[in-house]
Image (cartoon, rainbow, N blue to C red):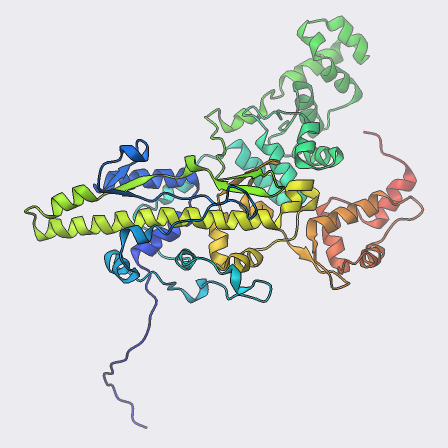
Length: 517
């Protein structure tokens, strides 16, 4: 068969990522602070965009605005339906697509809305705008992408502690508790707040909160997460292996040291003058404010994107934080006046591009808000037990469950949960913290949350006696009797994540008696 060259014309379908779609993807995964910065840049760049300065009645004629209507959790008395804003601006979908210069159907096969499953009847079909929300990920960085902004970013104390938490604590429940404690640490590195009130707010046992705090106090810098100066200095001395009984007494009586009552201190510490001088000198070499090594800059508080409040009928009201939603207007009057004047073709093309960009931006902002609200509402529905009973009742949840429920793709849910926060009666949490793995049920029932299984393993080991130490195989058998299908290697992994030694080590420790500190 001869090899030859020839020209052929074929008709086919292809995927095109327009700049508008790239912008929509970028907006969807931005935090509220980054979104405000992005909108401010667009306001400076586009003469047809205006910021809303007053109430709707004070807006100029011809200006159009996207007003996001917040939704409540199903069953709330204040629930309201959303009006389709496109009907007010365009006579038909075709006219809208012609104005925007693109087709608004989902252009990415891997981001298509998930097909309704048996567990999700067709009656829960998402509104039409959910198709546009499920745009795909990817695309090249635009001109505003600045690598140096990431390389030179200053690491804050909360960020530093959160990174250590993610590497040290594997249990999702303990991670939630740890993140809550980290959020209560001031810039000097001290934990502000009462542990009992925190435990009550989280719905967790006080012993569990104290255990997580003890783990946080081993983080870098030494002395961080202490509740007072004495504890901060004791943590640093323990790090240096210098927390002997005399030093414990000295740190417990800092008030006498401040009064320079050295005679009384030497008597309490039961040391001579030379040793006491060395102890005080060592104490002075410690850092009383370990958190300041990360700088004393302004700490930016977390602003939640969604509020969750209990309703009178026992359900939950889920609403967007309107303060985080930039409100921009498209000045149609200015556009009409300028476009009808004597302008060149280049100026006319620029004006048309500005109108398309402004129109798409307002619609992108509206769609971003609606998508966040849908995802947050489904998370609240799935994690109702957590909101009512506390952190120990987190359900196993993954992106697929939420995506199927709201008829969107997993990638869309993943983008929405990044850098978004929800304010609940139990505290402020990032949306991604509500997702955890599951353990299958041996009886074919509902799956068990991985953190709930970890808690059961911990309880079994805590209740064991010195004469009846449970091996990993025995724990597997006991869990299967409780309806939890789990492998031995998984039990070993969870046990190690909980910092629990093996059965051989536990038997040796319990028979040898408690180890003095």
